[in-house]
Amino acid sequence: MSNQNIKLAKFAGFCYGVKRAVETAKKLKHDNPDKNIYILGELIHNTDVINELETLGIKTIYEVPKIAPSNSICIVRSHGEAPSVFESIKNAGFELVDLTCPDVKKVQQKAIELAKSDYFVIIVGKPNHPEVMAIKANAEIYTDNIAVATTIEELLPYRDRIEKHKKTGIVVQTTQMVSSMNLIADYLKTISEEVLVHNTICKSTAMRQKEALELAQESDLMVVVGSKKSANTTHLAEILKNCTKTIHIENDSELKEGMFKNADNIGITAGASTPQFVIDKVINYIKKED
Image 1 (cartoon, rainbow, N blue to C red):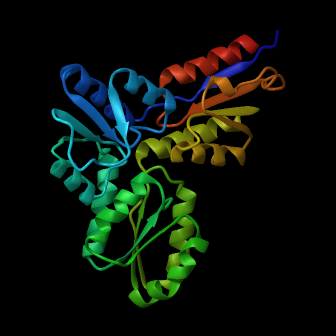
Image 2: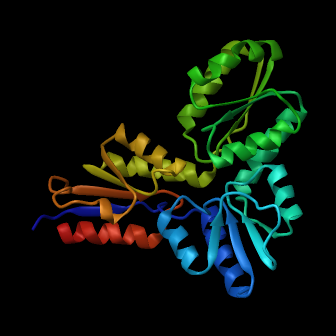
């Protein structure tokens, strides 16, 4: 029997915004057993949690119906939504519960401020991510001068417009990497007269990345637990792969015998939408292997 050292990162699993969203959704159903509870889009990027909510009678919908079923609540998830979507929910006749993460609201507000002050707005993030789509939709009410990018290459088509505009403002998807923000900011400083940077990466993401990197320095193997659809989880895996051997799994079902044979020090971290019971199952599997 080997003496494997298994260490779980302190900042692993649910962040404040996700915890708040999941607990509030469950409480809404508990307090309103006779009402239909709907979530617009997956509440969080975790299949286990979505399945658990379904068993409680909390349904996920992917578009707003024209007319809401009677006695219905519609939840806006932590990623936020476009202002037009809020209108659609109200017009359909739903009771609206807004669970947009407060940190995401701050990004939306900063993007709006930049747009109103005639900055060319750069959103550092994935264009098709729901959080980014909502940030963009909020800024678009006030300006057409918006670009979404995580690399310099993605900004190149906007170069002429940015140069002419002279004033550029940056906001960042809450779960992005600092390195992506810095690369884009440095590039913009070469083509824009003024660059105003709002580092809107949430503290939870920054601390999670910092601590996981520190843990990776002393680990032969890092295990990142969480959905492949989760931006903050995939970024964690990306960052750690440059430091030590890293595997990214959704849950314990992806673990195989012998995976940890040559690792003496195993570090475990998890994305902001990974529930504790999923992390615990992974730890228990590794302990049994040991």
